[in-house]
Amino acid sequence: MRDKRQIIFLVDDNMTNLTAGKAILKDYYNIFPVPSGRRLFDILEKVSPDLILLDIEMPEMNGYEAIKRLKTKQKTADIPVIFLTARIDPGSELEGLSLGAIDYIHKPFSPPLFLKRIQNHLLTRRQQIILKSYNENLQQMVQKRTRQVVELQNAVLSTVTEIVEFRDDVTGGHIERTQGYLKLLVDKLLGEKIYWEEVSSWNLEFLIPSAQLHDVGKIAISDAILNKPGKLSPEEFAVMKKHAAIGEAVIESIMKKTPENDFLHHARIFAGTHHEKWDGSGYPRGLKKTAIPLQGRLMAVADVYDALITPRPYKQPFSAEEAERIILEGREKHFDPVLVDLFLETAPLFARIAEHCNNAAPQYEGLKETA
Image (tube, rainbow, N blue to C red; front, side):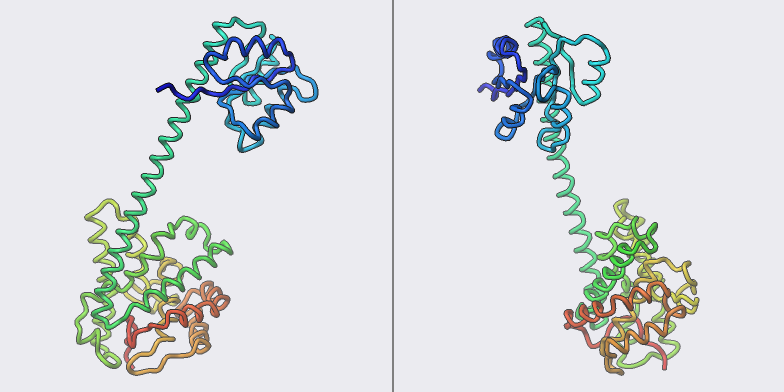
């Protein structure tokens, strides 16, 4: 089966040139004789050619003006253009090539040479189209594979999280809410270009889902402590505090076993630093201020807010207004002051997320403090 014949526009105001050019090419291509530059754009509204042969010396709109207009339109910018002209000075040829022409054929031309040069250019054009199609298909395959990997990673994250929550008697509302809070804060940081150098480098497709693992270390805490219906003793709380370091170590161990571990990078930081405090009184390392990774500072706000608005066995939930007040009181003590200010700006949205995700569990999170 023969390939579909390629289309060539032959643009020239001289009828003799149009007739001669068509005679040379008609046995090989579908030729559209076009008598002017203006007429060219009328025809382009209906037909897209594989090549335009464009005369330079034409009234109303010359070849240079025509190619400039072609290159400004998305629909026509990639159509290859060959200038046909009687000009032989290098300056004219350089100008035409600079405007985007792929070749410059001088008139009068030898029919065999004229045909061969056009064949070569159209062969190159066809190969470029095939390569572009191949690259687009390859890119789609890569994107599909990437989506599958991300979906698998998120499935692993969700499964591990569910195991931890099952032991901690949590339904999953905490995870959903804290992810929503985090996204609000990160979007605010991006929108106002705060901590821009760091935040703009994050892959949010990995960042938000990885927050699910911030309490993965609880998997190593005994049920007697994890599900104690009341405040923990100092000794029990000392054990509970180990979950941050344990979670970080668990994730690091997984990262060492696979080179595809970008999605765990943020998870490790969330797990190991979400209980650090701005004034250095947190755990496990007692980090202060910006020595605490930004992920940990963000999670601290989201985590504590969710603990405040959720019921526990020994306390009723605080109202959204009371939670805001407590977060504000922790400014420059527990929390990064910049993030507290952003939180206060978005507090109504925090409350809306908490109301929407109304399947909160009766107890959760590692905030079982001593009296």
